[in-house]
Length: 212
Length: 59
Image (cartoon, rainbow over all chains, first blue to last red; front, side, top):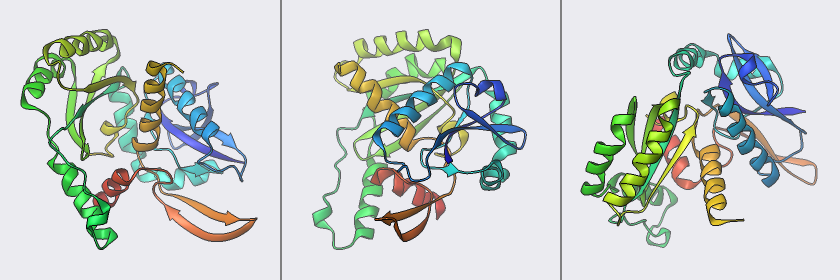
């Protein structure tokens, strides 16, 4: 048997009985036990992992681990992330009452490169990277986001995700989530022509340092 | 499944596969119980853009 990691948590009670709590230093890694030969791409496993992730977030905020890391023992898990544990502990203590939200916005001016226009994979990847960085949010929409949404966030960051969209990631107090929903409704009214997706709550993902 | 439920599911899977801290892992690709390749991986499942971001961070 092995375990698929879901997140890193401050307390054992934040994890159990929703998932297995594996000690890693002063913290706990949540895991789902699976057979050694079960592929990580298994659809049911993915859905189960997403469901466990959501249930864990209902209990307490945690540092999300990107899907794909599997471990067999506590020692193996600790070895892979020991150097980052002090920082994660700080984050978990500081943001225990907070969650992340994301606002994905379509970037109409950006155009994804066509792979047939490139002679090498490396050149295509570079072009994808450049196209992603060229994507921008319509100015009127950005102004409204700054007026309606950003004041609710403790911290925020614009992230270029791909060539067709940009994302605002924010940290918000859990008790401010209803106001975030209202801000999303207001945004839909004031800038009706821009497609966006506002979603929350999420665990510490961007603010755990991975996308800085 | 209703459109709203599909949207929520897609968003949840996007966050699962494309967000969060990356911990180095390993995988064995095998066919018919014969191990063919042993790989050190940062990301097992991700879209191309996510791989580019991880690659650029390592530069």
